[in-house]
Amino acid sequence: MSKYIGVVLLVFLFFFGCVELPSKENADNSNLLVGTIVTDTIQKGNYVTLYYKGTLDDNSIFDQTQIGSPATFQVGVGGLIEGFDAGLLGMKVGEKKIIVIEPEKAYGVVDAARIITVDKKMLTDANVPVILGIQVNASIGTGKIVEINEETKKVKVDFNDPLAGKRLTFDVEILKISNKP
Figure 1: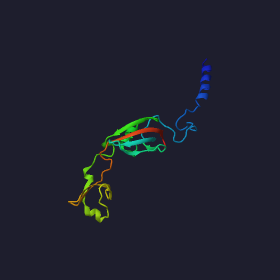
Figure 2: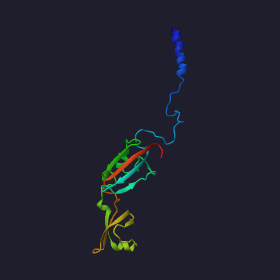
Figure 3: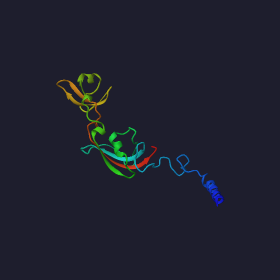
């Protein structure tokens, strides 16, 4: 009887002991396409293809994709505004969602130190037209003339991001989640 069990064990080990179990390294990936869906939900590092529309509290649109031209972003690597990134995590293909982002998680609050007052002459000497709303390029970035005081000959230039201090609302629809762009 023990010889019989020994023979059965040897046959069992011969057939099943030599079988290689599938792993990530030896799995048959021939039926996978490059860039296919790798997870059911969006995770950090995934590339996400989506449609979106970004609006402000007054319902004005500040950015949007066009039908037939979705956007693709990598999530969780610092390339998107913090609140948008966080709002996408956990979403699924086909899911639609409205993501509301407070200024602190978007472009920040308005920083008074980035609103500077300069002499009007300084701008005219640099051939910058002194017109309310015009953009001004300087070493600290791009600003916008927000106030002109003809009496004092002073001009206020705001170097905050145009969306600083604003709550943003994104209406998104997820089209694809992948590991490649």
